[in-house]
Image (cartoon, rainbow, N blue to C red; front, side, top):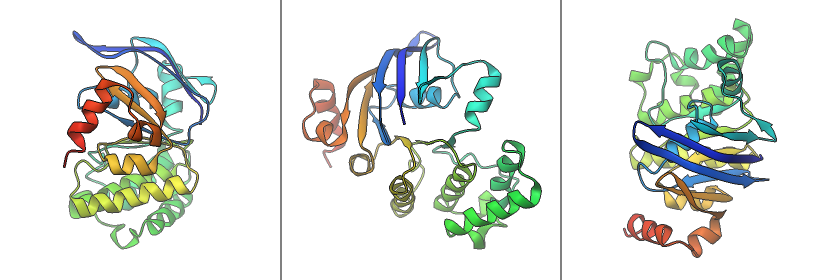
Length: 243
């Protein structure tokens, strides 16, 4: 995947969350974004996903500019898979219905075609026995697997994960991270925000360190983790990798 951001700025009230961000990644397969809380990671991801409109600046994905009018954004959102920390499943629908819904409403599948595709993707993630359960009847890990299954079902151009394990206990965290690793190994393009530094180091090929609304460092994952150049990244690693 090619990703280029040009002078991207976003302000909430008096707080500038993205501060004139520019980056050009001509070829990235698995991109991880790390940094302190409140530094702009999630807003950056949501802007790339078309869920936030920047105040100024441009986003190019695979050479195409992302236009921020409602029609273009809707088309863009329907072409990518997004997975959030809070699962975002519809509580009144079963696991199967949660996967069927975007296939019918956003992708134009007929009911039986959507049903067949949803059943197949739930089976792939070992969720077929939970197909008729509503989210409240599922564990956190199972809910997140349903959310990933739903994101995959639409055959997205790429997948975005925003702290997908922050609401999970350690066992479920490992399970979900294993699934994301499998998707990467299948050749899917991924953009991932995570606080799991070990997973970030093994799952991605390129890393952005975002703090105070800026990309402080960018480069191959192994280089950033082995030889951080900035004082900010050294300080960040000193805090998050202490224990």
